[in-house]
Structure formats: structure tokens, C-alpha cells
Length: 177
Image (cartoon, rainbow, N blue to C red):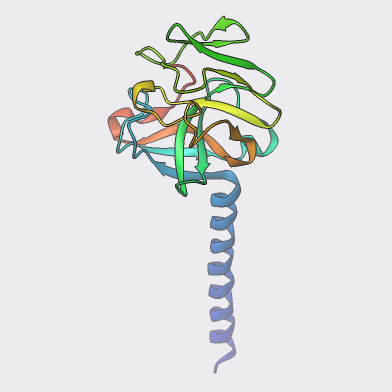
């Protein structure tokens, strides 16, 4: 085989391998694409929308109240999209159809409907855990549910930051409704 052809083949192999490594690092640590396939975040996010998830900001920091987070649901082996509401060390209570953080009503409340308690209505959030809710509280399996409960920090994958589909909704996803 001609020496120039060998060099060209090796050059292509290096290029393709580099592209795979870069794509792997970007998807694993920087961002990923997510499809909204649930109604629990309506009207903020609706089924069929496609989002870019920022993973890098949670490598160095932690979720803040109001962040729309992507979390691993180990029970059903899928991802859920919810809003971080209660942070480690806080006292969360659902009373009078409203969420209260450390005795103060959650403002903004990120929902258009009343918030019902589901079973337990008082939560003391330990270190490394988060209380998450869907914006569509009437149709959301979230921290009020025994099957989700308080979410371990390690199960929070990233933060929804940008909507890429549909095109008429293209843009940044803010922390408020």
C-alpha cells in the first residue's frame, strides 16, 4: 500500500476518533437534548417540546429554587422534568393549597392551580436532597409522591436552559413562569 494512502487513512481514523471523543464528553458532561413527554410541567413546558439541558452548571454548583431540573427516576428508569422548590436544610409544607418554605408562601409559586398535599404535607429537607414539583401540580408525580419523594442530588442530571422545538417557542427557559 502506498505510504501516502496509509497516512491519509490514519489521518481519517484520528479525525473520526476525535469527533467521537468530543461528542462523548459534550453529552456526558456539558449538555444533552431532552424531549418533553409528560404534562406535569404545563403550561411552562408542553409535550413534544425539545430542550437543551445544561449539565455543566451542576458539575460545579447546585440547583437553585425555580430551576427546571432533569432527574433520573430510578423506579421507572426514565428521566423526569420538574422544578426545584425545596433546597437542602429547608422546611417545606403544603397547606391551604399552597407551598410554604420555612413558613413563607412560595413566591412565585410557578403554577396556575392550587397545590394539594399528597400523603405527607410537611418535609424537612436533609443535606443532599431536593423537593421538586411539576408546574401542573394536579397531574405531576413529584416529591409529594412516595414513588419520587425527596430527590438525591446525585440524581439531578442538569438544568433545562433552552427550548429548540417548536421553532415558535425557540429561546431561553427562565426560572419563572
